[in-house]
Length: 229
Image (tube, helix red, strand yellow):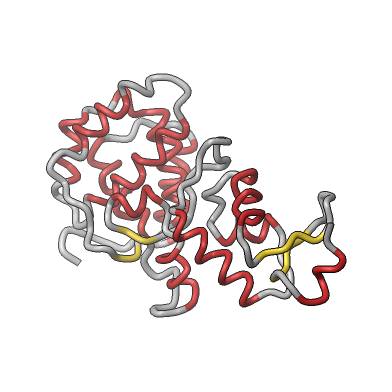
């Protein structure tokens, strides 16, 4: 692979996890390299997002841009930065300007899977990744639905309406019944639970059974209809 010196093994990844978790100083060059490695490991991608949310103010956007331009997949770093904003409680006006400088001149990828070696080629999971790919991945030319934040804000959903519809249709085909949690998981937790409930309630082919926390959903029609109120 041009520009990629090695595919990180588990021992290398564990070392990087430790550096990030101990808040050790990480150079712009190392951050650029770790961004490449995140394509092999969703856990590393999530940890990088958290570390960047902590460290971005001390990192030179010019040096980081220069380091990214030497990498094979510089657009991958753009995905990480799209998720950083969800960790910020302040500096929301300044961070986008810093991010723009970091990614200046870097073009999106050509619509490909973000994670490498985590899905069977052409398999069901790969299809679902593409259908329900979240907006941060799509913006930078990638497909994936792993959400790199622990909890979505109430007003946030990172999956397009088309991707959400595809997820509901697949649940209707595959399951006799399913829950809001099943739907949220199918979307890689890239949707707030309240929005997920609204999606299911609005779908004409979905029927809610019960009105308690134990309620679930089925295809509209059939024997379940007479039990729903």
